[in-house]
Length: 99
Image (tube, rainbow, N blue to C red; front, side, top):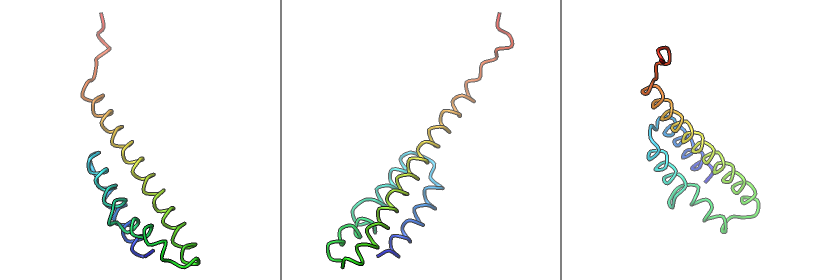
């Protein structure tokens, strides 16, 4: 179970690094956090695990979820800043000849 989460998290990190739009990032969020994802399956199957397994799987799943949300937030901010910087570079004002 943890191996599946690790694998999906590593794939997510590669994909989010290469995403170029907000919709790409949000789509990745749905794939990694939505129904059928390794994380969702792990959380759903927690009820069937022993106490010892819950102590390992639960904190790991929560850690991965927090890291995913952090990466998503960082990427969305970076995309927004890229958009702002692109607009600023396209709309240059020449202030040297103001009369």
